[in-house]
Length: 119
Image (tube, rainbow, N blue to C red):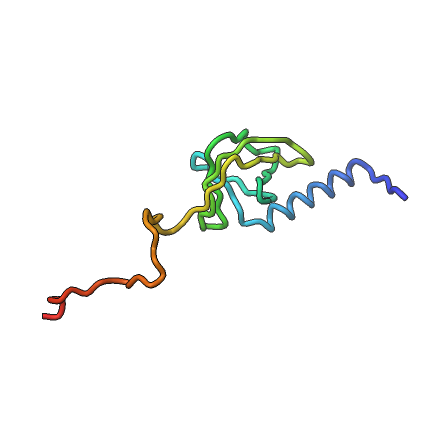
């Protein structure tokens, strides 16, 4: 059995759903110094509120609160249900330490003490 709701009620329900998604998420993207709240996030992309979403194409930074998670190349894919959908072309996880350019062996010492260190 299908229930028919008026357009006003459907619009109100959709607005409430979008608002709850926006409030529940700490994720945000930063583009040229401007932050945009992420409504939904999945492994291959994310969505922003369509009415104030920029047409992103290129490099963006994805944050969870103040924690920098990913540096991403994105493209705008589609608009559906008041959300602008974006897909990752590349999503590189941000690290808080420099990458090693050598293989670190499991039994390597943490540091070396020289013979005249205690004189």
